[in-house]
Image 1 (cartoon, one colour):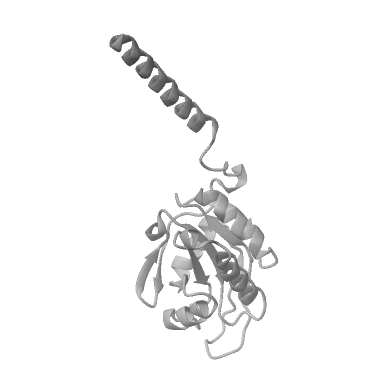
Image 2 (cartoon, one colour):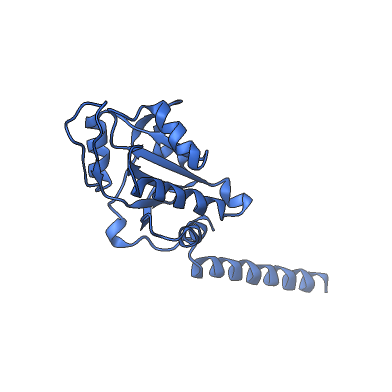
Length: 197
């Protein structure tokens, strides 16, 4: 009788294990990455006020990435404001797993120290970084950022034309969604949440 009871328990445990395994297989842990985004982005090493910053430093976190410059009159402050508000709409556990990176395309005027003050004004989790013109051109090509910096002295007033995408990078380091400065923070927060589940 005891042997029969042990057999039933073993069979029941086997069924439970099989059921859990099937449920995990049927429920994908992450949404699919759109095909158009699968070759977009990539790691980089740029300078912040605290030293080198790599995208790979944020492995395990969702990261919002934006390219712009501190003298930008409209799109950049709007985008950084949207990013900051989206992060604030996450719960405390989720906020620990999210970060922002603001990449300046205007290294003549935007020092790492100025960038950190500027980005930190919106949210301390947004890091301001930049690099040499050559480094930025490589990163921009990898991320398909369109931009043009006028050949003018740093002490003059000029405008940098640039694309205005906000990139969402998943915890594995892949670009998984694009937004812009007109996207609602709630939509961005909701998308981040799906990649953190």
